Length: 274
Image (cartoon, rainbow, N blue to C red; front, side, top):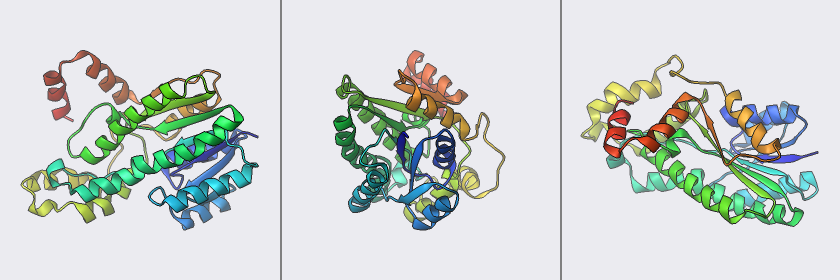
């Protein structure tokens, strides 16, 4: 049975992907940051354990537990666990940015480095990184998340080049708006790090961002359910020749195209409206 270790499986994209890949016959090692979420997934029939991407000991303990479950082999890694910290760059404390990078980039890097020797020894493996349209184009009030995804894109591109010919394949999935709890889950981080009431942008926060964070809302335009990402993950894990990139949702295709063809000044005019 093929095995895949996933992070960020408590809800949204990771939750759907874990159940879908298990239904396809994969041994899914569905990790979450919180043990109570792992207990819920175990009750649903998944092999789940805690893996905190900000904690080196937890990362290595989680991988060890995964390898114990598979007899020391691992066919795939799906890096997915991440969070958002909305707010203007001028209001973003460096410690807040650092905390986000610990989860969204550094933890992924540490886990991936620990997995690669296992895959090298067995001569094959798939590494799939869940990026974002915000790894391709910048949007206002999302600087921390944008920075982490731009960094992820670059690091993953280099890793793909370096692992060519080893039997290890590296892919990026680049979703646009997907139904998930990322906005809801960003609220504690926003409240911890962003002093919006004392910002020169207080009115902008009040008129725009606070409503997006706290008000119940209809789905965004072009928003798709998590299975849109899972479909790309299936190809990345099972196709004989996985792609380097898997765009998901119309905004991803559109912004990627605009970035290629528009001068920066014109692209900024488009992004200012979003």
